[in-house]
Length: 600
Image (tube, rainbow, N blue to C red):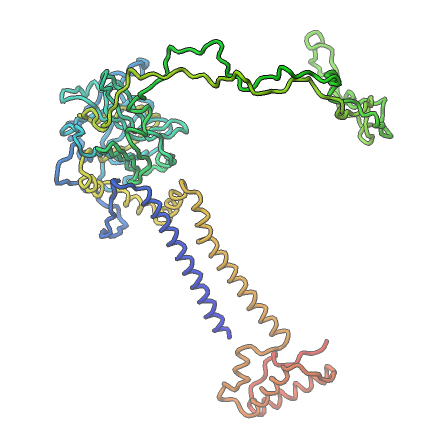
């Protein structure tokens, strides 16, 4: 029986674990479906490299290689190449104090403190509370000629971020642009990247649009992402920021290849690219006799004769009676008899000293002290101030609005994608936190080329960081990331993970309790255990006929039957005689369980 129960328990445990596995698979499928829904057509996707084995040692960095030369690609592999290609600004920031106006923040190309790839260098912002500016020209200008504009780069806040930015500026202009004069007012075409100060987390996408009528430049800000961005500033991991602007005027902003913001340059930016065709006439004014009151007091209404406006809201309750035991001569508060005037009390400066008031101890057991007054009750005659009822205004003309006229500054630009050509990439930043790592910049118009670049750079680095952080922490972080924007998934986890575990624990506890109850019942009723049953059935080949008879007698003794009361001494004598007979016949002695219970 015990072996059968164990087999049943194992089967039930197997079923519960199978149910748990199915539930986890369902959660993963739901999460994957939501992630797939978030990735619109045209999003840059990176397929995981399943052929690479999992290694325990830190992998070695390899320089990315592309078949075609993009507009700009910078992996920061060589310090000397960085000095040749990049230019640090020598300008001053307009409107800043002289002491902090210089762009004297330090930059360094070195390996991060906790690099996941051996030998992987990056551009690191090294100074706190300084203005930083560095820029590099593109290998060839990007002119928005009908192909998608794709830019991505990596950022890692090694010390988190308190207040500062990590965005890039894609500078407008020609080949003659002077990068040594790069400052905050240098014209740019696109500004993109993370920014934070306090609790305000931003992911900028700003482009400068040129008015085709006046030639004026106006900044257009994409709407804010709907999801939370705070984890990208605090988890101290490398994150990939990608912007894609398509020729059909659509755009996508991604973090770690997950789209966090998307829309249209014509509809999802503020202020809009195209002004309205009509505007309110600024010269139009509301006429003096214009009546905007929808309701007016009824001029024909009059106050009723019995309306008394002088009646108070409440009146004393004449039916109230002073409670018995009320102490009229005692005050609720009395001076503290134990208080003493401080030694440094100056009556000329502080006035006459008075002891602080305390509750009167005489009033503690009384219904009240002091002068008794009747409580107030609502006045049934009170009506308040009379006002005439409101009626519809026969002269109501509605809410006045100025007339609309044609907008003299109206224009229509149906191709805001065609922005000012880009000639350089720059970092112009102020930060209260140092050790910000930038790496693997790329600007291209080829999606396959961009995907190849990511497979050789960010994907390898991201996988290495996941391996170095450990599988458990990565799993926990993954669950937190999934549920951050979808809190209702916690209910799914509760059903498919926690509930089966609770049922499993409860089942094990119940099975254990039942086993203990069965053993206890056997002890109380002297029922044979499984080992004893084998003896009763004669499984032992050495048993003699007398031992089998003894087993039958023991089995018969287990059956409920009425027996005459026997004195305790007689029972002991009978058992001893039986034991002697068993020894002579060679049959095994009965265990104490088979003995009949003695009466106390």
